[in-house]
Image 1 (cartoon, helix red, strand yellow):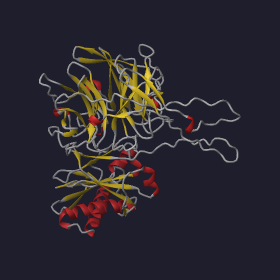
Image 2 (cartoon, rainbow, N blue to C red):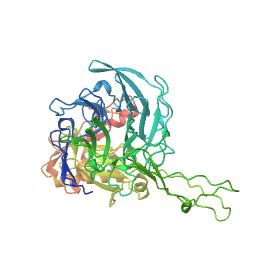
Image 3 (spheres, rainbow, N blue to C red):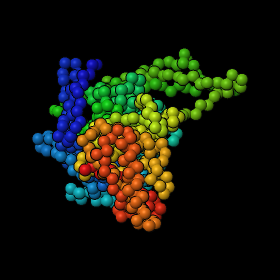
Image 4 (cartoon, rainbow, N blue to C red):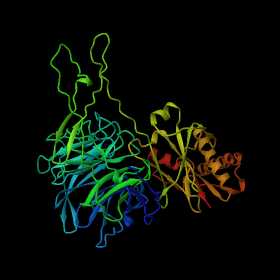
Length: 554
């Protein structure tokens, strides 16, 4: 099947993200949910009826935790004409941490998963009119065993919850797990869905339809994966670890990453899609409802029967396995196609060699945000080992960066002051958020990484030189920018001496910049001593924050 994808744009909440997928001779146009989307990360749509769709929006300035908040719950409603309205923030369902709607446990009870600090928990909200009132926290074991953010859904009927996340002992990076309701507010321990579902990579955004016994999920583990696509697997029998081979849902696949479908009606769905595997997600649907082309035939590997007992354990050879054909409905036949992986044996003892599964390290990714307007920015990265620039390409693995001696990365965006970020501060579980300051009148920039020898105005350290060299390069490339360099100290000691020291330190910064080619006339200095603190001088950490050099664009 040939799939043609139009160019994708994501620029503002009024810019539509348009795809065109061609299936045979009939084109099916996709569109974003107009007013529901934003330049931010819009994920995990959940249809709860009454023309209402809830979803999680990350890094939005109106989130309770501001532009670095990893996710608050937002709502969009569909009008009688089929148009999706502008999204509204549901602060009543959100926290300053990560918030995710799992769906309806019953018609009056909404389940919300929260991650605040080091704790992940599940909560019930009760419906009252059009509002949701907080009810209680439920007993859900193992939630804190997840490393990083979690995605998932409650299945229709409210008896099963499917969660995807990274845990010790998993089969890949993120795996899909099941928990079942065992009491009014009690849920069972998480059960891994097994190797048929969970591959070596990432499995995310599970949605299970109990009517068809089909699991829809996002994966990049299958051969030839490009980003993450929606796969569908059918549950076989009563066991939750017995599944058909997952089939790719071609109808909604693209060169980017798809995840988290939700059914609005029999022929209408909403899901998330990105331009590429590193981009922010948009909520997507078809421009007009079209018949959903869902796979109807599924195949699965058979489980080989155990051989007769011998003196030591052995494995059945692949040549002894037969392919079985088992009808499961009037129209569907499931073929079992076994694949046996040879087990390494010790040549001396004949014992099986047990290989411990290595945890796959995820590459780090970044998002640059305008620190004032809280909008996403295009950016470039320059990797640095001390004062030396290093040519380093994706994937960005923290272990590899450290092995190569890379200590920082410079994040740059046109018209914005560059910012150095240390490798130690990278977020290994989510995107590393970098706030940048535009070079416009009134903007203030803290010179991070600029140090002086104790009690003097002498610059100290390679990081200081690297940081100021980057600043100098930026100012040479933007000769229209005039800055004032403000020196500050804490309030310890003689106020007059502190003011003189702060002025001398500002002068040292100016002298370094001039030595790198910056026009002296575009650099002005001031020394404020301890008269403008930004933190309390009662603690050492506060005094350290007050000892600083700032730039102000004039």
